[in-house]
Amino acid sequence: MGEGRSLQEAPSKRGLLRAALPYLRPHLTGIGWGAGLSLAASAAVALVPAAAGAITTALLEGDTVQVTTVTLVLIGLALAHLAARHSGDLLLGTAGERLVRTLRDQAAERLAGAPLRFVESHAAGELVGRATAEIAELAGFVRQQTPALLASAGYLLIGGYVLVSRSWPLALVLFAAFTPPALFVLHRFRVRSTGAWGVEAARQAKVAATFAESLEARETLQLAGAARQWDRRYARDNDRLLDGIAQTTRALNTMTAIQAFECLATAGVILLGGVLLGGGPGEVGTVVVFVLSCRGMFDSFIELTRLAGSVQRTRAGLARVLDLLAATGPVPESSGPVPESSGQDGRAVERGLQVTGVWYAYVPGEDVLRGVTLAFPPGDRAVVVGATGAGKSTLAKLMAGLYAPDRGTVRHDGADLTALAPAERRRRVALIPQDVQTVRGTIAANLALGTGAGRADLERAVKLLGLDGWLKGLPDGLDTETGARGALLSAGERQLIGLTRAALLGPAVLILDEATADVDPATAALIEGALERQAGARTLIVIAHRRATIDRFARRIELRGGEAATHPTPEETT
Ligand SMILES: Nc1ncnc2c1ncn2[C@@H]1O[C@H](COP(=O)(O)OP(=O)(O)OP(=O)(O)O)[C@@H](O)[C@H]1O
Image (cartoon, rainbow, N blue to C red; front, side):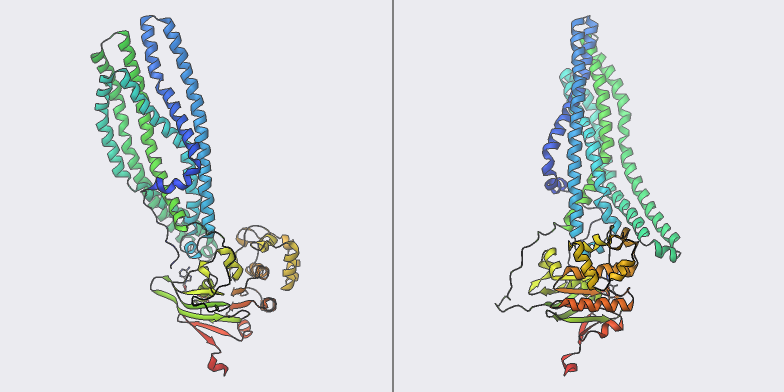
């Protein structure tokens, strides 16, 4: 149980920027330049109404030189807007893509190094969703919405400045009339949207996880005739998602009320402009500036409110991605060679694998192992037996350092396995499970995984285990494709890959967890014999149900009721 915390469905969005800063830092320059250029583009557009007002005044006054000059300025503004917007979008897009790449790499690396228990306790679809789709959504936001967000905010600021500088009384009346209803609508939006996007993201992930599970378990579901039942479960998750989406849509709809104010404000500006300013050419120009600016500012405000939904969704997504990164923690640096250790009291440590007072529970209060103590000196050979569910595989994963004990320790040559870097741990202890997983590629690529063995080594290992006959029978020998999740191989063939890999690994302790259960008895005996002979000073621990395998070992450890008993006991030997 004691292996990091679980993921939160809708993690808090407090302190999000601070948490994201370490990932943002390398891209801040690009983001800064991009944001600056986007604001410059907004400034160019926000100045267009001022130029239009100046042209109106000049036309009414018959000043053709002024008309020509301002028209040229207008063209200049359009060109400046185009150039700044284009380069700003490009910079922000590139910085965003790089940021997302960093997050994606980090998520993949951390998930690969995450404790087994963490991975097992979350649905695969949930982890995949967070590490891929949710990060891709962040990319979409940075690339498409951030430039629009900056452009709209910039237009509001600069447009506001243009209005105030053109006629502050008219600007004041406009702001006074518009600000209270806008604040009210924003408040309603906040109330309605609190948590809504987090809930939607969590339900989206659940739908993906349920779907992924149905694909993984497709054979069982079809055989059991339970496909329909699973469809109903999927439909239920989808209904909950739709309900979540309805909540976020309702929140967004609040913001459309802003549109109602736009027409009122335009009419009010024309009316008030006439009353407050009078009808001279300069005043008509001012009204033109106000009407155009107001339209642009309303459009920007509506765009901002539309984007508010994306911002909320992105914040919820970012919080979920950062939660994944925080829960998995950085992958530990590979430690150097561990020095020859001695006990705290200076005495030489015990050699071999020492399991001391180990307790383990998957569910709090339901202990699978209860104070197991075992010692495997170098070169030891032992078989672990016990009824189904007795805790043999759990013990194997603890002895391989894949789980951390709730209490007690597992040490190899005095070093606590949980404190070792993964590479060092693998050098000391290797576990071959019953269900050997393969990656898409050839048999040779799968055998070389983690061992980096060359072709000649692979052929030697296959021969040593007496598997050359099997390999020759395959369509392309070592170059035979394994397919996705080893689908092109039989369960026994996948085990043969796992066992050959074990022969190549050469760890100090080799644990086989029913690793020959799917292989025919004669081949199993051949391989186990070869592994034993090859083992030399290596410790070999085999978990088995098969009588023939059990009988080959003089020392038998039996797990029962979470406790371990060794046979023969010292009394049985004498
Ligand atoms: N990932 C897990 N999450 C929760 N409970 C688990 C998990 N893995 C195993 N268990 C439970 O722990 C207990 C011991 O399981 P374990 O796989 O260690 O038994 P085993 O002795 O290896 O069984 P078998 O002979 O069937 O392989 C079982 O009750 C099982 O349901």
